[in-house]
Length: 170
Image 1: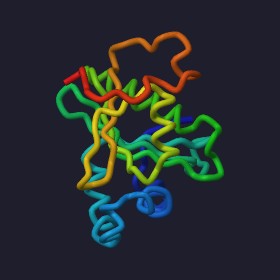
Image 2: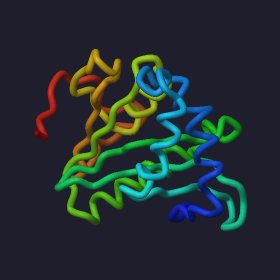
Image 3: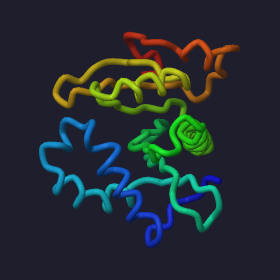
Image 4: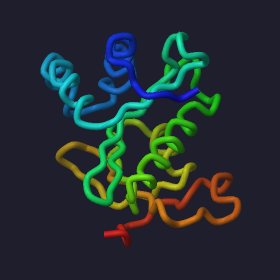
């Protein structure tokens, strides 16, 4: 099941997942892990965090943190415990987050993915995200996905929208 984050019971595991599954790929977070970790509670309060669990009281399988700004859904962080990768939890969290964005009248979802994480880049392409550019300062690809467009038949099996060079959504 996917539910909203419960800070008292979820944050310890969310922080552990960030430290073990996200920071190792982040060029900017690696430079000052302590500063990054100190800023996370405020960051989590600035958006909405969904968590995946088998049952309400079970340990976290993964989480997704999103922020809505105007008509854009920003995918801030996604992490799935290594023992549960490949079982569809990341895709389900993303679908849940995108539905949340659509319910808030978002027309586009955006995210950045570290160049050192090709597995994440492939995952996002498989679920319909396209590369809209590259930021050499943070060593990340900017990716986007229109939320109001229906996917073409067979899109997931083809690897999503591929790598485009521009963002037609603005």
